[in-house]
Image 1 (cartoon, helix red, strand yellow):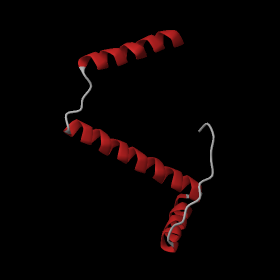
Image 2 (cartoon, rainbow, N blue to C red; image 1 turned 180 degrees about the horizontal axis):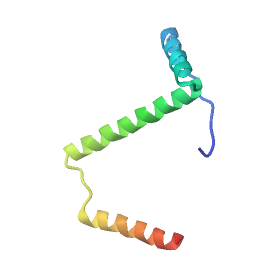
Image 3 (cartoon, rainbow, N blue to C red; image 1 turned 90 degrees about the horizontal axis):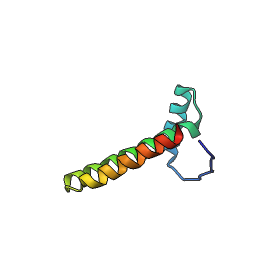
Length: 80
């Protein structure tokens, strides 16, 4: 991770107890458990958005796909 920031939030006392129990059971810090949970939540929301776009028929055109792959091919050549 490039850098970190401090986030503050309020949670119910019951949730704090569950968080502490999980962190203890995993042998990890509260911060680690919260980071994993937040990352998972964001990934799930990204997937939900992608599924909604797919269900709406919002797909890339063949030209857009070709252009994207071309860009990545060129970047790979520049790196090697």
